[in-house]
Image (cartoon, rainbow, N blue to C red):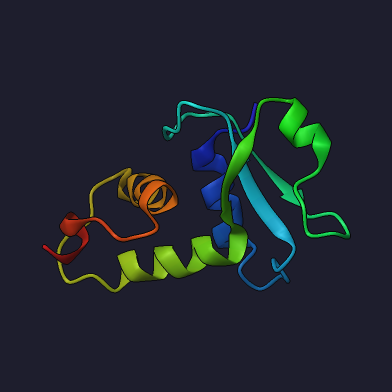
Length: 103
């Protein structure tokens, strides 16, 4: 099983690769330990049926994950373990950064 934490680490390591067609899909409940996968969008730009049939839901594009993590890296306050996953989950749910990012 691959969890969200592992996928986030993989995206960070893959920053040099072309991630433009890769999407992260996660099973509910969205937590750091939630099951996650990276999938390639099909020719129509959709998530493959195999991921959807497996109970996975769209989470974020891999390239967007890098942008959100960059916002965390540039924050002035200290980060705690797990802030990266908490930030990504908040952004995926609300399409916005949480207040604590600016504290």
